[in-house]
Length: 463
Image 1 (cartoon, rainbow, N blue to C red):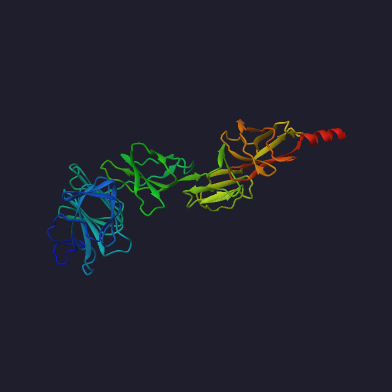
Image 2: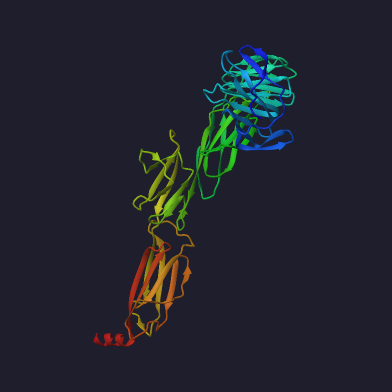
């Protein structure tokens, strides 16, 4: 519904002159937009989705509805919320049937406000700072988190300063003001975790117990995105909550204590948890916690935004890049941490020193009498184990002409034979074997000159 421009004043409450006309259930203004979560329409009501719904209203106010909250936008009002000589404040009106709504009025905005109504006799006007409104069964609560709001019970409107709440219920028909619960101090047991590939990780958040808290609500959001939607909400009786199966990224956890009236206290300062994803390039391998890389290969870092990185034992930290590699093709220690902390995650990189010992024999072979055997023994110069599926390319030539041979493998030893007469022409023949790793790097070679049978006899006669 649009803004009502010609209205009739009906009541003056201290510094607040409320001006209105009979309101009807309406829909959001065309300038209102959902910036997070989702909303479904059920008849005359709007219902927030599983992750709630956040509106940016015309005028700049932000309203966050809880999961499953039922509400309806009503015609806007013009209210005298400050001095009688001040301009009217355009006020968006919302009727909340069930659930809660958190309202934020941008700092310095005195030309916008939000009125929240309940099926009960309680209503409230958020005119500055942060406020909340909660409807649950026969209880309705108004919460002033920061700045002053106006709360009405029937026709009795009074200001409610920041840090206080009022709950209208059968046991408290006057809705006496009380202090809202203070936020707890929250820590995470694993603020920085490293996972490989598409792996996931988890952590446990714990916090200080708050006096008079009936239970706690913990909320997990993904940080570093345009829409910081709540991914998980947990209700906990004890001051601890566990979160699992989280992919690479940066997350924030806030905890709010909830009193016996169902009023949620102020949320804690977010504790930030980072899960760093390691992408090992094709052809590299992991060996006992060490990532073995070929020359010029780099490891991808997902979720490294905002982290610091250092090499070896250096005390100097710089912003972490998106990829890291070997320093001068030597073993390299990568240390990562959250700025301002000392806990580190470490990556040990090592060069791939796969080598091949190639032997061709017998060394006095002659054709067409002898069979020539080629043996390739794989090893790692760094003393690391070699995967059973490690592959190499072995090329065999006779007088530079490629020869197709059949290789057999046992463990890390490859063997092939060249039958007599493999070489063409009169001879002698030079047999060469070159072994390359999967990246095409030469890791071993040998050659053998094979004499002819007549040349061998001539050589023997000369002796």
